[in-house]
Each structure stands twice: as C-alpha cells, then as structure tokens.
Length: 272
Figure 1 (tube, helix red, strand yellow):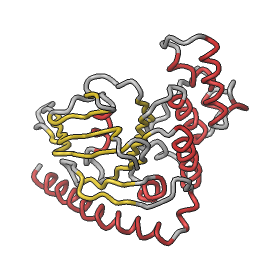
Figure 2 (figure 1 turned 180 degrees about the vertical axis):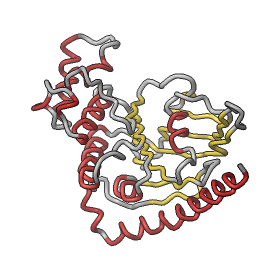
Figure 3 (figure 1 turned 60 degrees about the horizontal axis):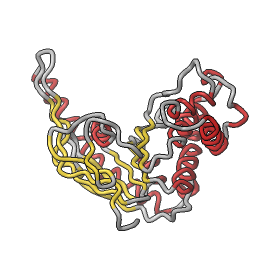
Figure 4 (figure 1 turned 60 degrees about the vertical axis):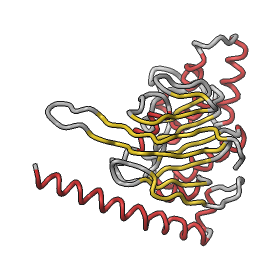
C-alpha cells in the first residue's frame, strides 16, 4: 500500500427516515476508513449491517446524515464522482443490446470520437475475453460472462476507484473463483483502487489486501484484517494454510456480530 489515500470515510453515519408508520432506522454510525491508492479493500458484515448503504454513500448515490466522504481530495455527495465505477450484484446489462454496445453504452455521452470509442471498447472486450461474443445478446451468455460484460463496461470508463457490490453472489462457487481471478487481473493491470462488498469470507480472504469487518446494525467497523498476500495472487491462495487462518479469524468476529443481529431481530419480532 502506498502513502496516498484514494478514499477517506470520516465519521459517516446514516439514518433512513420513518415511512409507513415505522420508525426511522439508523443504518450506519461513526464509520471511519482509509483506502490507499491501488489498495484492494473488502468489507464483510452480517446481513442488514449497512454494507450496501456505505457503498451507495461512497458512490455519491446517498448523502450521509453525518460525516463525509473524500475521494482523491474532493468531497463526495449527491453525484457519482468522475473517476469512479460501480459494478452491482444484479445483472445490469441491457438485454436488447449486444455485448459490444453494452460495453460502449457509458461512453456515448462523453466527448469522445468514434475511433476512440471503438478502441476503448475493443480493448475492454478483448481484456475480458469477450471478443468472440461481441455480437451476442446477454441472453446468449452464461451468468459469469454477463458479469464480465458488466466489468468491461466499467473498465472502459477507466475508473481510478472501482466499487464492487457483491458482483458474483448469483454465481456458483467455481465460477466465483474464476471471476475472482479476473478481478485480480483487472486490478493489477489498471492499478485501480478497489472496494469490494461481499457476504463471502472466502471471496474477501482471496481478493483483498485488507478486510474490514462491520458490526450488526447500526454498522461500524469492529476489526480490520490484513491478508498479507502478494499482489500477483490468484485463486490458488485458497490452498495456502494461512487462508484458513484468515477465514477462521473473520468468522470468529462475524459470528459474534451475526448472533447479535439475530438476537435483535428476535427481540423485535417478539415485541411486534
């Protein structure tokens, strides 16, 4: 990790207002984190702890109730910052467009010539191994290939910070490992900073330089785990004895927070 912070999250909290007779919900409280330029940082936590809310705040899609987010020295809030790309869990490809046109979609509104768009899209499609399928529609592709289309559509924008919101949750374990290799290759070759939100301890332990463990709601960080992997890592690290040590440590902390969250849910249900 370098000395330059790509992303600073300072004392961020967020409260969703009351709706339909239910009270307000505090999703996050006092979330503070720093991600250095070129770092791969993963976030795990129990269901409902505010992981995706945190990502939406960092992406500029939600303005936090408290605190602030700074990306490359500039305050984030209200709009998606230039230089930031997001890949969501849901398949966000347009079914009526070809792979090529899906990847090119985000460039259409930019002041780029047709030749530059063709070059960028061609490079991204080739990088993600989709050249043979450039004319196909998403319905003709596997789930893993559709997620590669989404990654290519983000890559073509040349983001300096990539936010991944459980992008492989719908895939089988084997495909998830292979897609993890693709993400690591993308990370190395672009030198982008990556923030991954995931429920998978294995995914976090394999991909990240550091892993932040969030508490039950209202979410905040209770521990940060260093993996110590070399930058050239790939899915073969799962056979390293240290991999089991890392996932065991993550589960020990996550289990405590998940039980706490389940206890609150049971108490709330009994009170209703």
